[in-house]
Image (cartoon, rainbow, N blue to C red; front, side, top):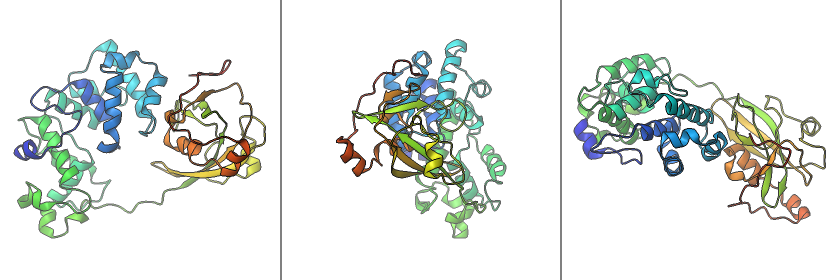
Amino acid sequence: MLKWYDCEGRDLPWRLRGGRPDPYRVWLSEIMLQQTTVAAVAPYFTRFLERWPTVEALAAAPRDDVLGAWAGLGYYSRARNLHAAAQQMAVRGVPQDEASWRELKGVGPYTAAAIAAIAFNEATNVVDGNVERVMARLRAVETPLPDAKAELRALASELVAADRPGDWAQALMDLGATVCTPRAPKCGACPWIGDCAAYASGAPETYPRRAAKAERPRRYGAAFRIERDGAFWLVRRPDKGLLGGMAALPTTEWRDKKWTRAEALKHAPVAGDWKRTGAVEHVFTHFALTLDVYSAEIAPPNDGWWGDASALPTVFKKAALEHASSDFAASSGKSNAHAGLKARGPRKGGRDE
């Protein structure tokens, strides 16, 4: 496997071949990669390193700057935890082993094991979704996910290499990501083809087995869009809950029942001539959201600030930029070309938390 990795392993921005990896880069990449693809993470990783090249620089940054730089990457609690963990490390120092990494905010069993293996060459059992798939196929595990997780983890632990454990962990992940893929696995290129029970069965794609998924529930809400010269009136979401601490358009709560216009406008940030200018669809991990968008030419309330849509989470960026009604735009005489706009400062008397 290590010979295969030396020839076929992926070149990634956070990897260092032939030297000791930087724990800061490894930690940053592993937090970003949680439930997020390599393609999505790569440009964010590069921008974060350019802006905050050390853990001390990240710890000293205003949290709002970190949250803004994270916008669009999703799972926003990761950004809050990233900043909190950087501050922990600025005081305590960088952890040196798996157990110590688990004491940091936002670092769970997988992430701690991955950092310890890759950055410190500790022989840990690193099991992500790619490794689960490799183990399920290698041994033709019949137990469906998620019930099979403990079994797959135990199988992976039997194979942990004492020699180059960091490379071993990355080799298994790369094998799952590039060869033992969910669909159309490239079995002919796999170094374990001769040992793979799923390949021998003739149906490797059917592994890992999966329990039937429940239908994703749908929720409904309304967002309120006030625009001036390409900037939008923004508020800060509460720290706890979905998209906690992120900048957002003002919104109703999100519930399982549709909002009537009358119900929604009771939650508008300020009274005015609100026009429904569209709706956006967005899928979160546990539910799908339909968000009606109401727009108005109106003086905003004091609680908020003018800001650029580029710092918004995707669902609010959609609401701000993609669903401005042409009739509304024509009546206001303003353009909806918002790309590249600069954020205004917080309105006097408002908040910029």
